[in-house]
Length: 409
Image 1: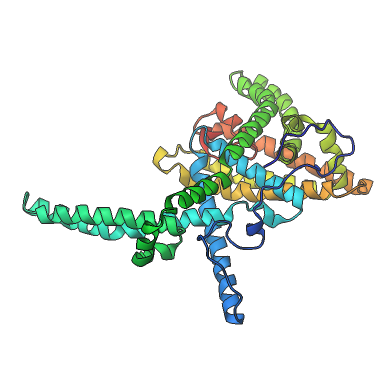
Image 2 (image 1 turned 45 degrees about the horizontal axis):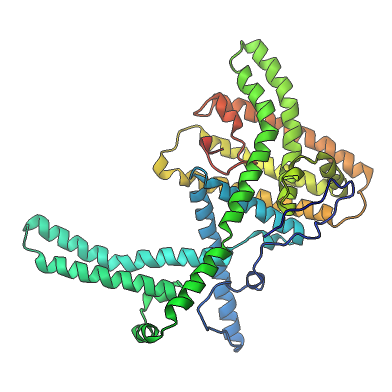
């Protein structure tokens, strides 16, 4: 977890020397960070090593899907959705500091474990749901004659709860839910240190999720983006109340500072996450110096960020029911996450270069960025006529704020 930086605005910025990447070493090596207590993988033959690598790849993909669903669900919960933004900012910072795209996928193995627990609990509850359904049907046909069924459902509920808890304590993998290992459970009950060891493992696991860090990082990243955007967007919202001619002129004038903010904001947020210093959100001069070192990479990251953000405005046309609000949020996270990773990659290239690139590449990138941000500002202006919430929807810049539809901001 990054510490607060005390550095001042540096005209010659480089990789923050005291920044610590939030990556578990076990994840870098391709193994889960949390596993069964006392388990070891021994070297085997070619088939064994290949099988372990295949299972590791499957576990990684499953963890990625779980992480996608988790961030989507978190992004639609008020206040807690700052944690989803914080995760995206941390992913961008990790890539910027290491220079490796894979380091943007933080906590994949931990997410895989959570996903396997969810799927395992669903499977473990299938027999209980089946028996409870039979009991319910019997009560409908002959009320009051299913006392034996009720006792059976109660016993099965107790056994299922014990099985779920024991499977989670063993590691929470899918295989732990398929086989209860009763002999091992009895041995575990006789061990007087079992409770303390499990307590330590659970606490370490929860601490390793770094949820308070993600929340605080996201809250400050959101605040910085809001301060950048509230001026021009606020003017556009006020202009929507004027006659058409005055509204068009005032909105055009407000679009100029909006274009300036959009051009710098992705990289300012990434650098803020690298240094964990709120003042970095407003150091435009440092951002310009970094741009001069990697102009093409900066332009590519800006282009992808804005391009991936535009189709998501179509999901804001209709009001999504609260029960399925997480469903469109899946698309928001899936589109915004790669843009954040690419932004970190561009910033990392600038960190590792000492001298500016050729003037031709710098000026071509600057000129090419103008139509990109201009088209983005134009399209976002017209979204007020398509969005469910009207003019206030102009503030819904999900590319820089919380990755959520509608007024999740």
